Image (cartoon, rainbow, N blue to C red; front, side, top):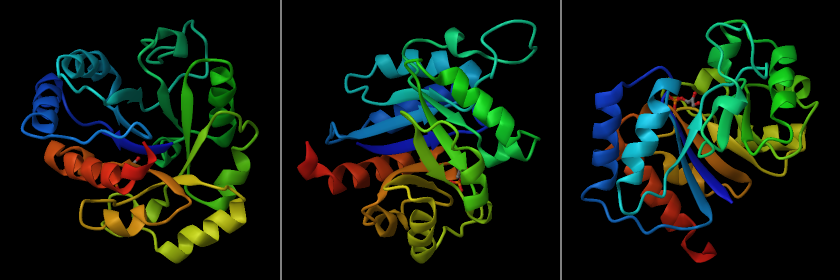
Length: 227
Ligand code: 13P
């Protein structure tokens, strides 16, 4: 399975979400490939709006995910959202994004979140920015997707070099992993051709529905023989 994942971060509102869905699907004839999972992770308050607007589109192949999760099941934890509170339609959860680590999220907390997700019907997309970080968050590895997002490449227009992705693969021992950092419609083809990269986590370029539609077309085209 291959993944194209949009991380909207703290962007968008209800109007934006409706316009995004219309802009993405309308006037665009996607050649859907079942072996490619397209997932959009909006901020929590927009998940329901996204899901409902998506359902109204005849092709509605996009799945919805979230950007974080509480390490607690429930209880007095102001501002947190627990896995049991998510719609059953949400199947993917980004965990440990570097922008959360910057706000103080520790490897210990990330491992607690991953532990909370064990046995749930959700797949964590576990982010790490370095080999050291990877080594601190691999207490649990079952049914997880790993996403390498070097901080120098996030939102900078400087995607990681292809050599560095090979190096990362050798050092982590991962047979495949997702890459994220300054992917856009112009550089996408270079990264799509790397066989051990099983997906992409896209920030900035996912906010424009036309640009994300172009990434979708490109990944569908690349894996057209795998249906
Ligand atoms: P950009 O695509 O904006 O570099 O962001 C990458 C990212 O952080 C996705 O989670």
